[in-house]
Length: 79
Image (cartoon, rainbow, N blue to C red; front, side, top):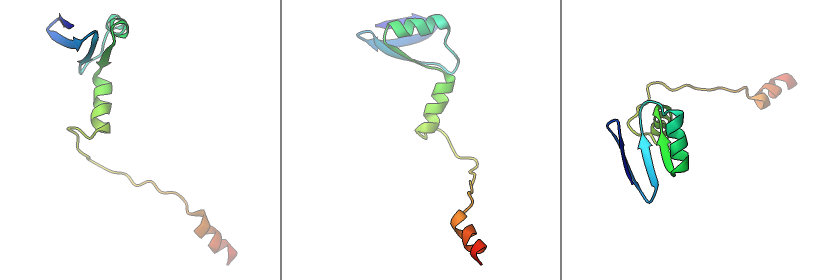
């Protein structure tokens, strides 16, 4: 199956396919995809997948998260 609409191309085999956009899909497109075994990847999902798989991303800043060491704190209370 090949679907061409508004300059975009969706290539699929036996009713299965994948369509990726950096924007959003209309409800009509989502309904169509649900009924035709097509996976839609919108901009938010694409960005999350890129981050998850470390694809074309770089780390700008890291944060250190601290927690209170209650065992050490209890040692000071015993003194």
